[in-house]
Image 1 (cartoon, helix red, strand yellow):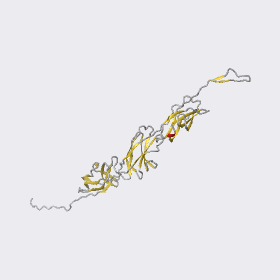
Image 2: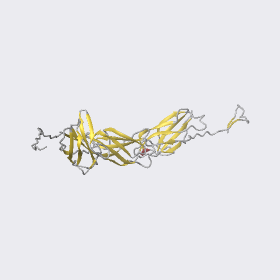
Image 3: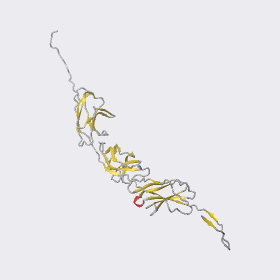
Image 4: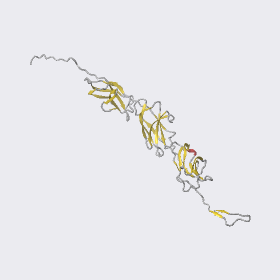
Length: 338
């Protein structure tokens, strides 16, 4: 209690005014912090909390990062007034080695409380491993195919994985080539992606707020595979009809090649007709059946085919229709009997 006595020049009154002392205690409920900076030893995100049951004496809240729950080495990161959203941002790339706790202090019109509400800061480390890429686009100067990786067990803060072609494993100079959602462990880099002088694919995890600063990387090589010595001799001697063996020599490297696709082609405008089915690697010829109508076709194209894509720039051969027909055919009957 607080007792207030009136005093005269003769003495102090014996019946004071009495006021009960009520100790006001404010502790913020539901204090949370989720680290959305996915790099090792870096923090970023928001500190958030709910209003306490009674905040009639509270004018504002102050949020600090500190080295202990008691507030050692604390650093102010923000303040909010009562009645506003109770959210304070922890800047991206905050050094996690400097702080262990986030602290929220209530402030009255007189002073800030000395005992805060505390929460431990847990650093989120994405930890993607075993990034790998195999080029399945068989054309020169471009790539395409599966990019794969092993995702961490805890990927609760990941929203997307973003892939880039880069000049180095840090991703300093990079071009976006694809993305995949959280929980994925692969994506397809589109065929025809220009490689140029870029040497690496880098993968960054991205949370709702931040993209990683330090990616995982893998080198990338352009696979080029095209047949050579393409040949065809038309053995169907009828005019406007084709037939015979189409032969070729295989590419120098068959690492990514699974089949060949052969077409009769009219290049202007482009019109194609596939010859038979896909030819498996190891077979370097296909029979164009006799009596095949030549139609408008003027050439033969042979494409290499990977597990994903058919080559866009095939080996090409101009085609001629060989025909042979005798002339001046005559018959004279010299048997004079009926």
